[in-house]
Image (cartoon, rainbow, N blue to C red; front, side, top):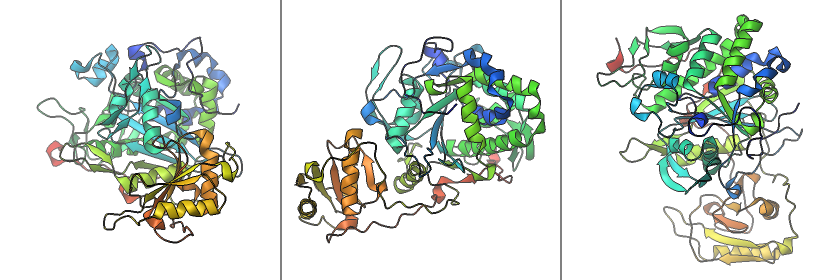
Length: 516
């Protein structure tokens, strides 16, 4: 059986449908736990687990407008396609067990929030895996979403905290938010609840984590996860594992950034445990793990059976541990609010590397990015392609080059694009030249324009901000008739705080105020 991306349609009839309200909600930490559990159970054979299908809960993949979706990932020369899976966790207290584990009684029954979000990217050739975490306190734009159960439409919002997305119809709105931000096509999502993480951590038998000093995550006002560990390495399981994953107060600077770092350490250690621990070959342990995982999980319709999850596990298991890279979306503070926003250049670079299937560990063979990739949408004849040319040559230190849009539109006309026209209604500012198109039916036309001008594939982008094929002439092409693409930097930004999956030296620094 091959693994294919979900189509985002409503769930099929039968077992595993979603309960309204609470059942769509998930664990505070995240389905990252389930993803690595599947890694460990891959060898057991999916026929053994067919009876577990009824445990699996399902939700639509994407609740945004179709026009806002990122273009599907392109296959490589061998016909292989990358996989992008969004792992979501919430702070929902929607059951007695989750309330007991999560505390915060005042939030019982309120809309769930996506407090943990990680994008797992598996390369097309399955040689490497990249994980990008988004800090919970990130401010961004959330697109319009429609609740699949009630039909309620949530209007688009700007500059709001990212974890609000889950409460706007379910995980499909969180998926839509990621696609809008990153322009990365997401194939699947996974979620797990509080109690599921505890049960799975118990079934695994303990995951080693490290702190540099004795830590007790607790304040006199009741804040903190309750985690209490001695300095050094300790295997955590059950409730203690959940505490580790939830700890903010006590790790480093007591921010969500530090918590994300601790989650990365846990995930890497968990993967190593699952792959190295011989006890997981025990059928009884595997069955217990699979029972726990399927009861805890919510997935999109494209992953809604044990067979499909088994297929996914086989794909994940192909990736060597030493080629797994954990990162955090580059960020910067937004004023004095304590919230963060994506760090423009660094976040854009990280998203581009994932979008173009470039390994974050720097061990890829050099990929050629100057050629425009083939599109499933055939281009029209050159003289039938309408192109709007905009002048974006203005910079922070220089004004726009006068007449630049007209000069480049005339260049296009000379190349046979008779429908090219200059738009002088606005003077924009873009560092690099880009070709934008609004929908899939114009992708081929946009790529054809780029190819005619020597513009690289990475500069052809889908955007709902334009109404047709639009060539935005950036500051990198302020003169001349030949475009010279800037050399692209394919290294992972240092601000992404990359952690390799085989690194056994990771250890959390402790805020002295939480040392005991």
